[in-house]
Amino acid sequence: MIAIIGGGVFGLSIGWYLARAGHPVTIFEQGQVGQGATWAAAGMLMPWKLSDSFSDDLFALQQDSYNRWPRFAQALGEVSNIPLHYQTDGRFFLALFDNAVKRLKRQYDFHHALGFPVEWLTGDEVRQREPNLGADVLAAIFTPMAHHIDNRQLVVALRDAFLQGGGQLREQTEVQELLIADKRVRGVQLPDEIFAAETIIVAAGAWSGHIARLPRSLRNMVRPRKGQTLILQMDPESPLIKQPVLGPVYLVPRPDGRLIVGTTVEREAGFDTQPTVGGVFHMLRKAQEMVPKIETLPIIEMGAGLRPTGAGRLPMLGPTGVKGLLIATGGHSYGILLSPAVAETMSHLALTGKVAPIIQPFMPPPEAKLS
Ligand SMILES: Cc1cc2nc3c(=O)[nH]c(=O)nc-3n(C[C@H](O)[C@H](O)[C@H](O)COP(=O)(O)OP(=O)(O)OC[C@H]3O[C@@H](n4cnc5c(N)ncnc54)[C@H](O)[C@@H]3O)c2cc1C
Image (cartoon, rainbow, N blue to C red):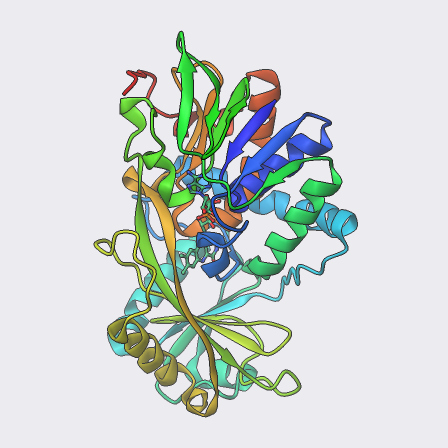
């Protein structure tokens, strides 16, 4: 039996791959699946390197996963029949001030040199394509490489595919402690019972470093990075913008007219997920500079999610020094993008014991002193 702690996009994706391979697997989720960082995300999918100092290993993992997305989405759509709204129509990156134009131009040159398909547009050229962008938009890059999906539909589809594959789901069930004896896992302690498992995958998002009895070297392996978001409602028949735009904030339209506005990146907010006046004000002010007409739209949701962020913003994926204990966390702001690669490599690891080369740079520290 394999037990997965956490029903976010990492836990659900790995669980789906294990279940469809015919292996007994149970996901434990302290609340409802997908309501953590995965719910708050914008669902943007693009390998992203802003400078030479960005980790080559992470960029390679992002590219690997990005290339897997079309087949992942298709397979999931076929099993679950849930529309993911996987869209491949590209995205605009906007500059609103002179110094932002210079930064955007550097980004354009860098991505052009990497061989990315990028197109430079003046403010007027981008307004011809998205007429509701404001006069403050001075320049833009368009790239057709930027894809996106509806992350909330993704949760519903993964849950469905996991259950159809024969996986067991225990929602409202917090894992309180790992059970470890003789340097190997034996199971997990639940509120009212012990659940025996020979493999445990910790995929508990920002909470991953807090599971009791984790090896000392893994405690606090990730920290929460709060990100606030808003959802506005556009008329789906005549949306204010048709494609995602990224400037000082991002605006991501959904086919049903919802417009996702985000985000903040807050280091010191702990596990708090309350939207704040400062966060909401910042997002609305910047969004209105980009698309002045948003001021007419109703706000239908305000919220926040906790990105699981590891050292150097790198993920943590692989085996630990405790036999049978595996880790899959640290998706930071690219966890949705990474989920097909995480599903493939982590399920393969759980079934064969082999670490795929693409995740080797992200293996947890080998020493495993128990707490
Ligand atoms: C505002 C925002 C925007 C983002 N936008 C994007 C984007 O556009 N593209 C992208 O690729 N990524 C994006 N991300 C990042 C992405 O959402 C995350 O990296 C990803 O969702 C992390 O998934 P996860 O499964 O590791 O964690 P989570 O989704 O947080 O899931 C972890 C789950 O574990 C459960 N859990 C914790 N402890 C226990 C326990 N002891 N027992 C049982 N269950 C437990 C939690 O309840 C939770 O449901 C964004 C994140 C935020 C916050």
